[in-house]
Structures are given as structure tokens and as C-alpha cells.
Image (cartoon, rainbow, N blue to C red; front, side, top):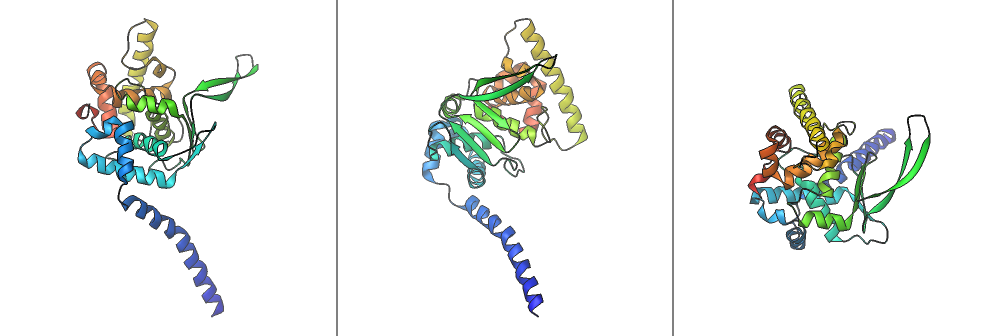
Length: 270
């Protein structure tokens, strides 16, 4: 009898360990959205005011899920507060509207610097010589569950939601990309047909951007997108959300592909 009781207690403990976090998350998501969070979004994410009511409600739930499951760490003397947390969460969760999502399940931590930060780099040239240097960065998405952001550029990009540059959209697009197993410019798409269509459209548009840059033509999509397929997806995401009409006019197939993936049409908001 004692053995059976012990087994029952162990099973109960295992169930509780699994159940309690789920209940806490459910409570966090269902709690009323704090009014001061809305004020932060209205101030720092102007696009929030233009979202239809149903998308705002979705965004509220996604933000509360995000804030409950991710840790924020201030770096370089920056103290984390609700403005930082809600602004970053609000922009990041725009990418998840209208979709079944676990809200960046591989992401655990967001590191926030006051401004551009130095990141160490190691490079090996064609003859095998190793060199070390540091780059000034505004943001970076790491494959170990962390995103690093410069707060001054988070604010700059979020308050001007029409310039095509948004470091949060960029780095969290990388997070979506990495959910498929690696940053290669193709996030989880669900079916072979989706992957085939995506590859066809994106490879054509990527090559087209590189050619336009080579010939010094003006581009709707920032030149940084020509770096590699992963950066192309991240930069195209910025353009899709911040310059939707220009992208739809000049890159119709790419716009439709991103609209299909993100399940929103930002032209309706801007």
C-alpha cells in the first residue's frame, strides 16, 4: 500500500509540474489588458491605433503570452521597464496575428542595450586565416533562444512605421525563420506546395534585388536584403509591414506570398 501511495504521489507531482505552468499562462492570457499597456502601444507603436478591434484583442493576448514566457534583461546600464517590454512585445507579436502560434517557442530571453552594441566576430578567409573583430549592431537574433536589441533604434523604428526599417520586425522574422531548423529564408510553411511556391517567388525576387543593386537602381526593399536569403526574408518582412503599398506595386508576387504567410494585409492599416 505504501508503494502504491508513493507511486500515486509521484504521478501527482509530475502532473502538477506540467499543469501549474499551463494554468498560470492561461490566467496571464485571460487577464484584463492593463490600460497603461495600451497607452504605451499608442505612444510607441502608432500602427496599433489603426488595427481593427479584433486584431487589437488578438494582439493583447499575444503580448500577455509573450511577456509571461520571455525574460527581459537590461544590458549596458539599461533598466528594463514596462515601456521597453510592451513596446518590443507589441511589435514582435504583430508577426503572429491570425495564426496558430506558440509565440516564439524557442525564444527565452530578450537582451536590450541602450544603443548600438558591439558583437564579436570570427572570420576565416579563403586560405584559412582566422581574424577577429567587433561589429556595431542594432539587433541580432541568436539560435540559442535569445534576441538582442538596441532600445533607441527600437523606438526609432516603431514610432516611424512607414520608413521600411524596424529592428524588432527584422530580428523576430529571423526567429520565425529559425523555427524551421535554421535561418535560410524559409520559415515553417506547412506543405510541399507552399515550400515550392515560396522558393520560386523568393529566389526570383532575391536575384532581382541583387541585380538592381548591381545596376545602381533604386529599390523598395533595403539593399541589406541582398546579403543572403535569411536577410532577404527579414528585410522583406520589414518592407511588407511598413511599406505595403510600395511592395505590392513593385513586388506583387512577393507581397502576396508574405500576405499568405502572415495572414494579414497591412495596406488596410496604413
